[in-house]
Amino acid sequence: MKKIIVFASGSGSNAENIIKHFAKTKIAKVVSVFTNNASAKVIERAKNHQIPVEIFSKTELLERNLLQKIQEIDPDLIVLAGFLLKFPDHIIEQYPHKIINIHPALLPNYGGKGMYGMHIHRAIVNNKEKETGISIHYVNEHYDEGGIIFQKNVLLTEEDTPETVAEKIHELEQKYFPEIISRLLEG
Ligand code: GAR
Image 1 (tube, rainbow, N blue to C red):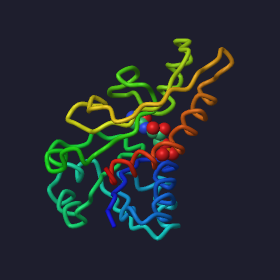
Image 2: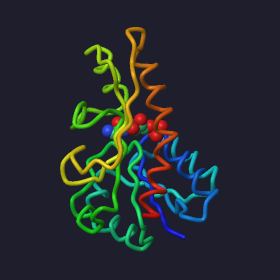
Image 3: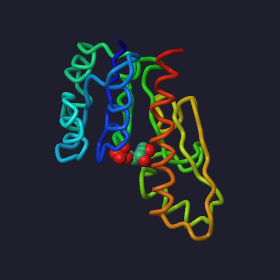
Image 4: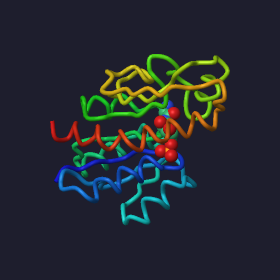
């Protein structure tokens, strides 16, 4: 049974979806959720599924202690699912091609610092984009620039608002993220 650690900073709907998906398979299991936000809804979601939660500060993310906690778990995959801090280089170096992120846009467009969540969906609507989508990619030392693993687009209309764009993205994420994680762990 392979081990997944999920990092999340907010609501955690992706984290919960991944937890639920792998609870039903023999491929892997989410063994821990790590968050930098002590009031994030992801904590409650993880606890509802009896998944241990590690809460750390922005400073602690950069310290050896957190790396040690990850190393004790010895994960096969680290999944960033709505994790909003820059992932530290010293952890990336220890886990080459074992850290992935989901981004709610078609990278390389709408990526980089400050581009997350509703900020992206508002920019998409303001720019009258005809489509958007999701990107699942490896994490490297630059924001949103690691190798793309998977992308899926969705068409937009003039009636779309940032909220409806968010719903369309949410649907794609729920459908494809667990599937791509499975594929990576089996491959
Ligand atoms: C997701 O849409 C994810 O793609 C996005 O944050 C949301 C988290 O939702 N990530 C980024 O914008 C990263 N740049 P969730 O907490 O409900 O899973």
